Image (cartoon, rainbow, N blue to C red; front, side, top):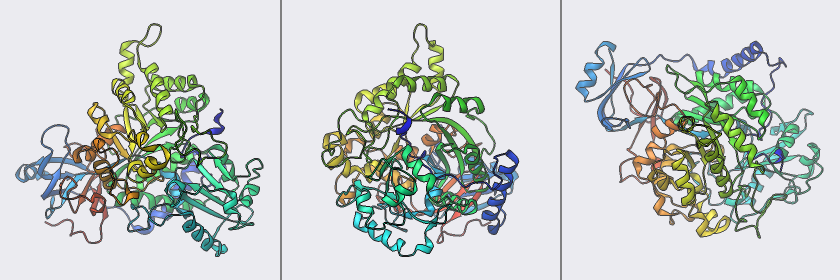
Length: 620
């Protein structure tokens, strides 16, 4: 299998907005992006400088790596945490800063949340598409829609087609219907979508619908013709074929795209995130533009951004990154934007039936993807290429994130890690092996882990980051249809990973599932399958403690991202990134964690979000 089967949720992007200057010179890039960002941010006025504040009279969980985890007071100044401890101790330490004081009135103060794996730019791109996700609209957007079906999205599509003047136009001025978030695996009933279902909706307007995983797209015949795709009458496209279709689709304009990007980051801030990690930067043919966009957004917006560089399964693609970039792992200061890692993709999506498995999907006799084997897709049928690329990256000091969903993908990823992390005659030395293992190497999603895989990961000092929505949102579908009861028991084994001594993080993979650190905590702590109205638990032995779940969206997530020296806990000397909640997520009486109100979010000592009903902020 060639790279025609690229398995990447972020490589199937529409082209990013084209710069009017044409050539991507540094000055043109900077000038046009600056102008577009100025337009997006200027109406909101200038930022306040970092505040000097003492917070007290609330529940303050520091998650400190040493010392007390809960304190009475915290003081910040100049964008930095100055002191934690008793109110008297903090007042003493803050004397020279002339601080104001904030009475928390019993509310909870935590380190700012860290989103360990999302796709920032695709999330912004899809903001302009018709939302066809299985999740409800605001304010319940983190809940599954119990009425989700092909008929429900069919009606949305027909309503949009009835207003052609509002549809996006391609370069020729022709309208397209672009929809995002379609997920047959969560439909009631599951209905596989092909051109035959979409053609009756319109025979003239191209329809392109993106699966929620990002690994599949569904096109009607008009869209196939517009994209000049002649060899796929089913209209179901995978991976690189999606990119071909998107070349013909309408493209966003730079100002509108930046406005959407701003909205994505503000939504993250409103959820309590102060750091987000883009797990696939540089996926398009305009990597300079992508990096420039995120760098400006980080410096102007309400969150700091770390990133991993997306790498196609080609040696030349990796060499390009290694020649021009170095990982920024331990810089201090504000560090609003930093490139941290290399991203490799082993396979596709389990709920999209493209994750790479040892055995056929349990539902393969009922549901399948045209042109895809019943065991899913691997990006590296010649695993020697994967091992070579992995070894070259870690050999040059790069942390690596490897996307692996299916059990077969996990196997070959771990085998390759073992080869490049183990001393052997004629190979690397024991000293070099230990050096590589300390790079905080990650396995992304790590969806299906048996005991052998968990033990091998622990031995190699690998670290899983779990898309915990697989349990809450897709758990019932995995158990009842996709894998069967026994296979689903291997899904997102958070507790076993912690027990084995690994650092874990939780993530949304946004756009795949909604942003929400408290929702992710809830799904890890209770593991209820939400398609069953919360009645059934998927493998209760894998439930996390509340503290472990909180660490997985704060300190341990920051550790995964090589940012724990800056953020993730409330300790003197770290950046003053914090969140104030209406309730304590560690309170055992609070079960619906996702409903806890995020009242304030602070980034580097500046309040960047305030909920409408939050108490007044700073008072002397």
